[in-house]
Length: 150
Length: 150
Image (cartoon, rainbow over all chains, first blue to last red; front, side):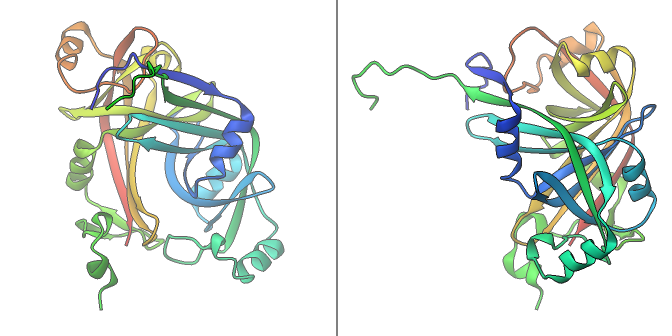
């Protein structure tokens, strides 16, 4: 594997590209803000509804923090062989989905809303996305000289 | 019949679990968390930028209870210059089994002094893409915790 970092570019992604990549993933890392300390980062499995990530949760200390401070949700994918990949960050504010609506969505049996975590997860949370940012590492194109490469 | 043993995916190999939390997630003991950190290569750094939580992937190495990564000038090096508290999250998921684990290491960021930077320079802690000069950043691991879904 080539450890050389010089033939790779770090490219900022625009919001459309971020939205496209976000839709590919089902597991993200939720960071719960705290202006004075490190954010807590916990994995969540999520689905997109109208462009906003939603996930199941349960009442508790973490949920209280999620609902009372800004959050971000990070997703990424890496290609270990080519040493490339991308990472997208959703910045926003989390809010509870109306319990009746949440109950109906969960009852519908839509398995994309299944949670991996054990225990009762009766609450649905939406991250109201304010903006998306992301970066991609891409290999620079190596021009072929037309003589074949075998 | 034990489904996990049948499928035998790597992530379903039993981690030493030290009881479970109030939501039924398995607690990973500290020694195992450190072992998982020492085997990882990519982690997600959680830090507070302008009092908003941000998560950024880094190529890291665990060296003497310190997480080391290289960074170009930006949010990460600024946080390190300020000695900010940050965390590194690593995880592994099995999309088929809906199982996985995550480990969170929290500590304080700093710019590596020259003598240690010279040591790190000989270690395989190379980011996949670099556009300009970079510095070594240290995250002293003060707290670790881990959770698993079996």
